[in-house]
Image 1 (spheres, protein in one colour):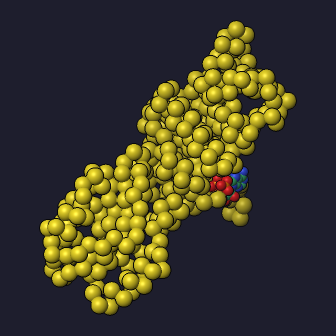
Image 2 (image 1 turned 90 degrees about the vertical axis):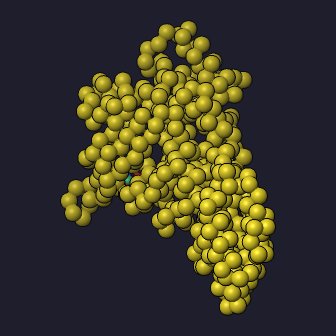
Image 3 (image 1 turned 30 degrees about the horizontal axis):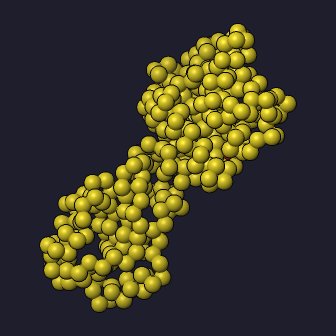
Length: 346
Ligand SMILES: Nc1ncnc2c1ncn2[C@@H]1O[C@H](COP(=O)(O)OP(=O)(O)OP(=O)(O)O)[C@@H](O)[C@H]1O
């Protein structure tokens, strides 16, 4: 388990030079969880992830790993702890003059492990990441996705409890990103490794993370299970990140209808957000049958988040105001979110 308690980090000294990169960060990552931290450039993501293994030392606060306070460790103890924390990077950080085998073997060589043990372990790792046939190649002979696989194999060499991913897929195309995310999921599922990732890409959060924290200006603006933050983002920054992947903008044709219907009937157009069980029930047809209203689906999509069905629909409800109000209450009872559409409906 990884815990940050009120972590601050400042760079530079003196009023003018001092930059407060982290301003009191609190979060907890449970064992076996994939936790994502998303934020724009300069928000403090790199600083935060580097504070986990003390590549950056927090100015104050606590970093606890399985109950151990990282800031209280001696240099020797810290070296031991760091073996339990693997890290992968956006630019892979492979040694260009070494083969793939030698790159993956490096952490074990530095630990002075016996040659035979290293050979066995590296072959296992290369097979785990699907690169057993590339052992004798050099990094320059591999694609970006393959290089990141090597990075993952190397990070796993010392059998870590935690894997830190620093923008691990930001340099990759969408297909390669998916393959690398799939591999990271396998690292969690098969090896039980806890994963902390920082990214500026909300699709990465959607596709792989269990929980997310949105960081802005050195502070966590919002955090929670991915399904909750995606379905009910509270802060403007979380809303803007969610919008980058769940396009809930209203198409012009529907906007025209909203404008027209809001003059004639102020209770006309609604956004319904379904999640979990409410998607599997025929909620809209039930509503139309129970109440004397017409339900007209205008726009939307149904997808899956973390294996949980999720829908975001714009619907027009036509009928008496009282009947519409009752239908809205009925939909709310069914564990769906329904809001009248204004400019900002999510
Ligand atoms: N070594 C440093 N010395 C001084 N200021 C720094 C240092 N590293 C980061 N900063 C500052 O701290 C703030 C947070 O930077 P950080 O790199 O952690 O953000 P980030 O979210 O990772 O951004 P990016 O995605 O662009 O890397 C920024 O204002 C940055 O300029």
